[in-house]
Length: 274
Length: 168
Image 1 (cartoon, chains in turn purple, green):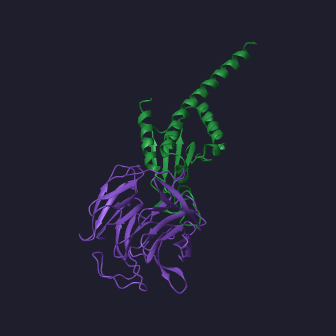
Image 2 (cartoon, chains in turn orange, brown):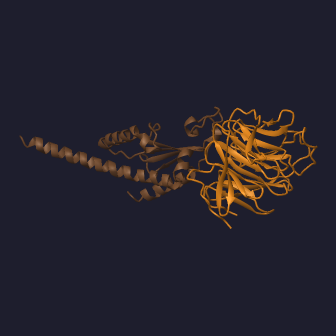
Image 3 (tube, chains in turn cyan, yellow):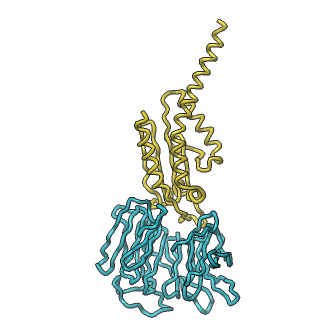
C-alpha cells in the first residue's frame, strides 16, 4: 500500500522514520530538519530543528531511545533528544573532522553511531557521561576517499562503509569503554577498533562509486550498489565469495534487504527493483 | 547526409542520460566548499572517463562526467570561411549572455566551439530528461541557424552588389 505525499517543490535530501512510522524527520535541501506528524491521511509539520549552518546531509532516528542524529556539510553533527514538553534539544557531538559529513547511522543497540565524511575517515561516536557530550574515535586506514554510505552489522560491532574510491570495507567499530568484548563472527575473530576485516573492490578495473551498502538481517551477507549500475552480494559464510549482477539500467542509489534472500534497489531510473 | 544525423544524436542522448546521474558532493579538498568536480579536477577518483561522440572529424561532442557535474563541449560543422565567422560570432553572442542560459559556460573548452556545464544543483531544479532534450535540440538547431544566416548574408551581398553596379 503506497501513498504519495508532496512536501514541497524542493528535493528531499535525507529522511528518517521513528519507531512506529508515525513521524518522519526530513531535510528539504537546506540546513533545517523538519519533523512531520501523521494526522489522518496527511502529514503535519510538527517542529523544525535548526542548528546546522550548511546543508544537512544525513538523518537517522533511533527507534528505541527516540533520539535523532543529524550531520551536515558544516562538519558538525547533533544528537537531538525529545524533552518532556515535546521540544527537541540538541547535544553537541565532537566529530573532529575537517570536511563535510556525508552520512550517519545509529548502531543497532543505539549506544553509538557512525558518521562518514569527506575527510576520508569514519567517526564512531559514543556518549561521555562526565561532560555530557558525544566523543568520537576515528577509523582512518586505509580509506582513500570520501565515505559515501554506512551500515551496521546486527552485532553492534561491525560497520560496512562504501567510499568514492570504488571499495566497500568492513571495519570493527568496537569501543572498549562502553561495551563488552565481541564474540567471533564469520567476518573475523580479532576485532580491535578500526581493524579492517575485509575489503571488496567494486570491480577489477575500478568500478564506480559505491552508493549504498547494506548488511542482511543475520549479518552474514553484505550487498552494495555502485555507479557502474551493478549490484553485488558478498557472503562471509562462503569465504567472502562475491556475486555480481550488472544491469543495463541507470545506476542505483540505495539498496536494502527485505528478507534473507531478496533485496530492493532504487536509483536514477526512478523505479524500485526487487 | 542526414542518414548519420539520427544515430549520432541518439548516441549523444543515451550517453548524456547515463552521465547526468549527479549527486551532491561537498569538496573533500577544501572545507565547507561545494564545487563542480569536473572543473576543479582535484581528485582523480571523482572523475569519470571522458567520451567523444563524433559524426565525422569536423563534428563531435566531448562529454566529461564527474560525481556532481558534467561538461559537454560541442564542435560545430564549419565548411568555409563564412560559416566559420558566423559560427564564431553566434557562439560569442550566446556565451556573453551565459547567465540567462543557466547551464552555458562562458568559455568553450580548448578545441571546441561551445561548452555547457551542468551541476547537481541544476538537476535538482530541472528535469534531467528535459536538460538532455535541450542539448540535443540545440545541436540540431545550430546547424540550421548557421545555414540560414549564411543564405541571408549571401542574399544581402548580392542585393548590395546589384544596387551598386546599377550605376555603371
